[in-house]
Image (tube, rainbow, N blue to C red; front, top):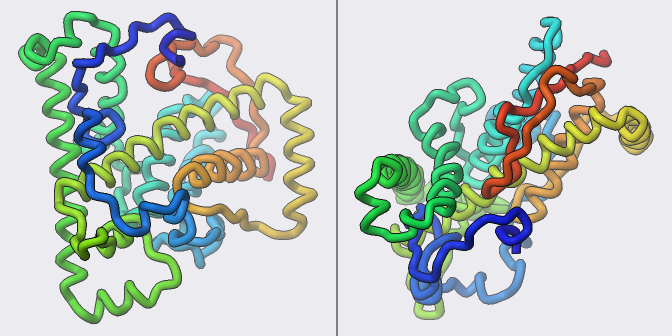
Length: 320
């Protein structure tokens, strides 16, 4: 439906994107994927993951005291000293990627400060590569695509993503072999997403294979940050375009929070995305007044997510 709305070609039934996750895997592969006991109940996984955490508090789940959200606002505060607009889309994308790594996998990526990391670049480029393939009918043929330069770049990015995911899973598995570490993890009231996968068993008592684990992790990763980043960025742009609505939202936020300086959210699935958007909006409006840059209006390009060809530039004025 989305493809029809923006006039894009729909990938043919024989088109295997070979994306590093089940989101675009062949239907037979998905059907053959073993299901854990927990996975049988709708949304049951939501009941096992972290409760709301205070993203502005040292008590947050992430070891460094936040769920990835705070770094971007600290960065913006430094940039407000410069008399020019700030391109927010890239910052927000790195923030959402950092958030999902910390909250779902307890993994410290440092991607907000190390955006040139090859793995980070691979993740950021994969959705764009998928879109470019869909646009080119010739590349719907696997043989033609894998022989093309675009196909080779895509394959390289997939391998980088797989290697990193395998490394995270392998390190966590090794840690769980230590009985003291395993006992400590199982005592937690809420496990992170990767711990749940590693502890999951099917009806025969078998755990997920390494390939299945990687597919689940990659699906969660790619589904969890790109769309959310787009939503947050365009939401902030709309707020900048409508100062009266921005003011009313800020007043409502201040009324709800009162004297509190923390914001709570839940770290998983659709709730993860929606609540991350709310937290991002709240923390942004509490710290900045937004206005658009009339010299750099965004040029919308509908890809897998809605992007701007030239970025999304906003003027940020620090409120306190």
